[in-house]
Length: 331
Image (tube, rainbow, N blue to C red):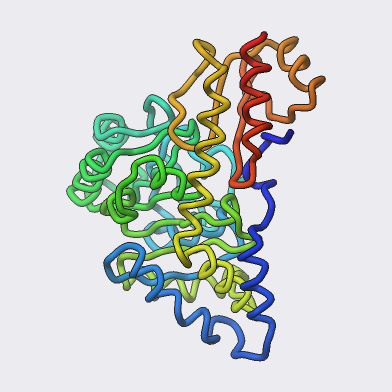
């Protein structure tokens, strides 16, 4: 009964079928017929014009997107628990040629207008200090919590006022949309670029960078090649993305993962550390309690010395989620 990460979830059968259907001669790199459909497919999803580029990993998606906005002498403002700060092995500094990350605070791993201003306001406008060039947020956050449309609009207004690029790490964007019940466009807000996650949600090896600014997309195409992410058989990545979008499979999968997380949370009670708004559950558990759960067959990550994280995938079985919920309730 595995709740380590949604990265370990199975590839959805419809994604496998799409990749098999793409196994025929076609143009190389991103010149194939499937890759050429991505801009229109994502424009339909977001109900506005956009350009979509496939890459193999979320790290590449985040860093390539930010590289179009940030100069080497600049910086990105993000939450101190953001994936780009905590879990990408220095990749932002590599892709951004030494640009800094400036860390903001905020409950549930979400920044606010005030917490971003607290980072920006002390920076003098002179060559002796690093200047912020972009704001990056995570939807859903590293604590499994979701930005509401009004929060996104407020952050977007701040970014525009301060002349910052606005990026969203959407590794679990689908889970956020499924929770909010709003349009994908509303859940993305006024961002310039979105890292649209699929690997955690049923794909095998494809993520998308969705650009709402065509000038940034034009730059990213060159940077993707330079970074070694222009795969010669890109049609297999495009096939995965198109399969995820077809008939809203990406939302169906996310809703299933969210439902499993809510089921787990039913047994957590006052141990809960953050609201359960996507597919992650964080709760207080002692070392002994964690070992009791593991002895019953549950797999999960420790989250510091006194807590645990449980992540549901699109293929998490309701009976396993229910069993975990009851096991926590018995502790």
